[in-house]
Length: 243
Ligand code: IPE
Ligand code: IPE
Ligand code: MG
Image (cartoon, rainbow, N blue to C red; front, side, top):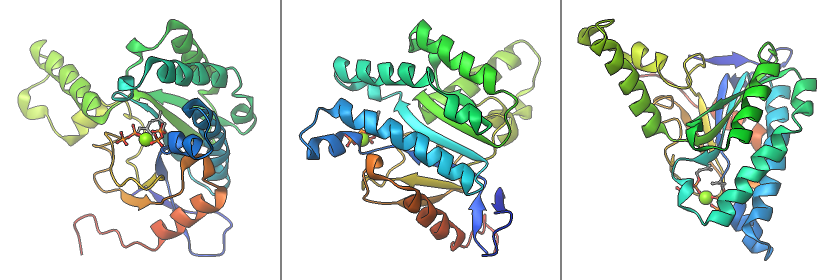
């Protein structure tokens, strides 16, 4: 499936075409330093930019970053507000991505986000539409279960309108109605911060993903840690059910 060998690299490292990153551990990073949690989110945002650019340098074509889950609304309002404010500030400055020819896409339910944030997301998508060095996907108010519900609702609508038959439902049709419609399945999922779970991230798309867990907290995650994860991926034997 979707793996590519890095061009020009003499080593035999297989670079995943699509990496998913669960950007976890911001709160604990701040707590360790006796800072408010929002400081951790601010550092985490810097790490996001750094690791996305590093991924591009290493030849990764798609990187999806989990920034805010459908469950993260359970947090105190001031923390949620601080995270939303960070997204807005962030989208005012996507110039470093523009310079690198990186396309930016958002996945998740935008209906609960402010109009201002939605406008900025759309603007960032519009200006980067034809950039092709790499695609960065930011998952904001994203949940894998809610994404599958959305796909099912859209298919049900087509059946109700007699545009489809129940027997037409297959994996491809479900995929075609996910947010990630035009994006290849995820090859490698990286989760820092010591937690070993998916927390509702890309649950459909990761059916055959490899997983890489590390205790490093996201704001401390460095280019070298990404290289280590890619190396670990490259050493795995993926069989996709074959032998
Ligand atoms: C991830 O860091 C960021 C979001 C979920 C928005 P956390 O805020 O979950 O950090 P920890 O897990 O509390 O350390
Ligand atoms: C997952 O982290 C969501 C993001 C990183 C955006 P959480 O901190 O929300 O996950 P749990 O609650 O530990 O499972
Ligand atoms: Mg967390």
